[in-house]
Every structure is written in structure tokens, then in C-alpha cells.
Image (cartoon, rainbow, N blue to C red; front, side):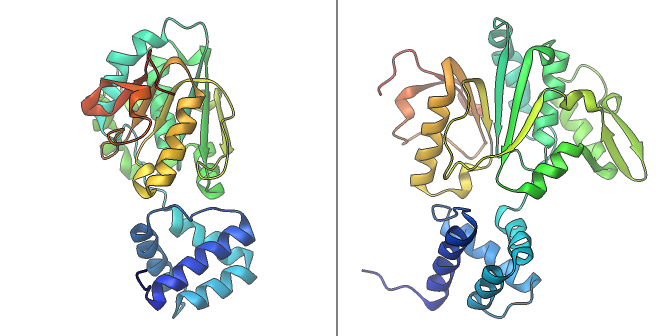
Length: 278
């Protein structure tokens, strides 16, 4: 058995302590990613050792809330990877239009940029009014920001370019009001969105869905948690439902690979297989 360094032991004990104290399960997240984020948190929170950080987290709820921001690191942008959204518009939307009502799950929604991107796309395709969007994340602070739909105005130029490359039908500025250095998006875009806390590590399926988007989330999971998440997605999707993953994520080598078929392989868009090996 390979011996662990003191630092590795401390990190494992911290992760276990978080699970036992707060029921947040990071035990199957990538150890490399965890170590990098924890070391950064130590500097920002003025802790000399991981053990000191653990002590603060165990005895101070506010310290844990602060650490959670580093462990989850919400990073997102509107219409991220525009070719993915263009593929959704061109290859998936025609199928979605055949359903009288739709349920779409944005898993790991972070601060909501992808949720708004999806809402705008569905609005332009005449589908938003018949949709329920489930936007889930484990970070309550990120969910609060997502519900508000307010973002830095200086990001709008970048987002507008993404939107146009994603096949946008109008101008992104048509969907928000600018004031005091911020962009407030039209509240009507979020009326069909249900934001809720959900962990892919511990929670189960909560609804049958037609499309699941979980992008740039599983790259932070180890293989066991990736398999669990893909199992949840397979269980949640309706017959011939669609799954969208991030550009660095894939079903290759997964035990669930035969349960899906590639619809737009280059954009990591899959469809639940007709002949499922379950």
C-alpha cells in the first residue's frame, strides 16, 4: 500500500469532516483538483495548515460557507462554447419541438449563465412557454446569484459574441437592462426555471427529463462519481432523451457508453439509445 504524505492525509480528513459535519460529499472528487482548491483557500483564509483549516470549518459555519466557495469555484459564461449551443439549436431543438411539454435539467448550474443561455435559446425557438427548467447546484451562494440574473456589464461584449456565434436571432442586449455597471436580465426568462440544491454525489433523480445539460462538472469527479452521475442522467432521461456534456468530457470508456449514442459527437451531445444494455 502506497504511503500518503501528511498533507494528503490532512486533506482526506478535512473532506471526511465536511461530509460528517455538513453532509456535503466531496469524497469522490478529483484529489488533484481538491488539493489545489484547498491550498488556495488556506492562503485566502489565513490558515497555515490544512488541520487548522479543518478546525475552523468544524467550529464555524461561516468558515465552511466561505470554504465552499473555493471548493466549488463557480466559473461560467453565457453561451460558453457557442458551437455547442448552435448544435443544440440545429440538431436537438427539432426533436424537442415534437413534445407538447418539456422538462430540461441544467445540472451544476453555477451562477446561472448557462440557464439564461438555454432560456434565451428556447425563447427564440418558441419552446420556453412549454418548458420547465430545473437548475441545480450544491452551492447555495451560486444559486442565489443565479436566481437574481444580474451579471457584470463588462462581460456582455464577450457574451454577445458567443450569442451571435451560437445562432442568436437578435441582439443579446435585447434581453437585459444595463444600470450601475450591471446587466439585469429580463425576469420573464427565469419564470420557467426552478432553482434547487442537488448533489450528484448523494442525491437521486427527481424528475423525468427530455434534455440534461451537465457541462464542465464531471471533470472534477473521479471515475466512481462520474459513473454515478451518468447513471442518474440515464435514469432521469425519457425514452430517446438528450444529454449534453462539456468539451473535455465524454462517455468513452464509461460503463454507460452503450446506453447512449452520439448525436453530435464533436459537441458531446448524446441521445439515449434505443437498444440499451442495462
